[in-house]
Length: 110
View 1 (cartoon, one colour):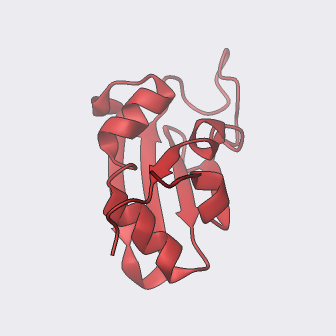
View 2 (cartoon, helix red, strand yellow):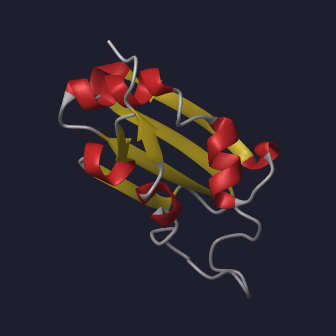
View 3 (cartoon, helix red, strand yellow):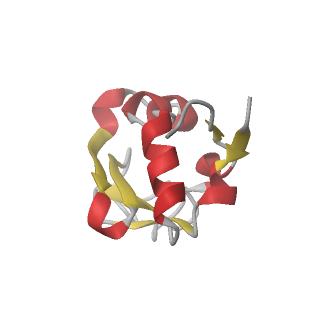
């Protein structure tokens, strides 16, 4: 079974502030074949995101596979508004780490 980590296939994996109440994540591929492999593997979906981040599916606002840009984007709802007392990442830029080691099985992908 051929397996690669998401960080080995994507060019950019990032998170950023998407307003006061949400954080958005971008996974961008410079190679369309890598994008297609990840998309076809089914390894990255709402259920996986909920598991990786330890959140209920209800916090996932959107999940989009955007073929023209070879990109996958999703947005989650923050527990506390950005910049409020106790909120730990005002810019949302330190939240993407759980995605890096996500294993993508490459078997049976055409």
